[in-house]
Image (cartoon, rainbow, N blue to C red):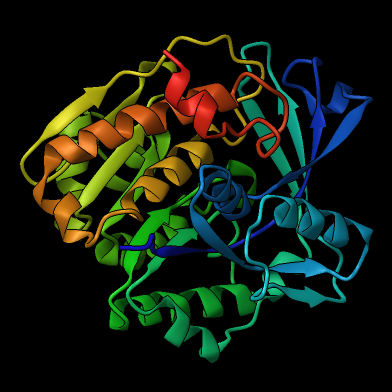
Length: 318
């Protein structure tokens, strides 16, 4: 059976990365332009590993928007659903600490202008939809379109994946609003990917088992919580387990979670039905082993998209 298509919905933007300056953006003087945005990163990760991905989002009608589209096209991501706006392409300024951890400051623009396209509904039928929410729940046309696409995915029997992609800079003192807006997506998703911070914040529980119990009760069927160098905590109705990662020396952790979920979705897309995954925890755990490798390899280079592993890197790494 041919692989399912994976529709990645949300923002694509320019990451201006301040390299080797510590974590304080106020002291940064040199920035490198990189293609970014969590859903776009996921689409590229899927395509680089041989999957079929399409990106649904909006860029500005400017040189930065053209750069982003050229980058995604170079990975063979389907861009037929992308919209362009007179608003300027969204920018993110990224600081890197010595251990590769990063912080963001956003200058939002065209990503918020995505409008709902009802013709896409027929295309996602029986395929897969990944919703990355870094900017998608902040109001405007994008949030409205995002909700419509969730409803379409539910009604068209799509496999639904959700990553809240919480960004502190975007939700200062509004964490409660972010949590409330995330709940319908957690409720309806087959697979949810959280960072440790997100899982604890949304569930209001510090321990992973308790956090997952809350999130399962909301509706999430499969939960993955990425733990950096420690690996990923995986929780289903029947199994809870930490899958270790591989040892690497990180230089930039930007996009590691996107590589992880992209690799996991690419593997799921090859199944005849996603019910196989829901019934077979061993199959899921084996997939997470490779998804962890994808995330780890991505941290060894600068820039999320440029550092994504290909099939050979993934399956020959130890």
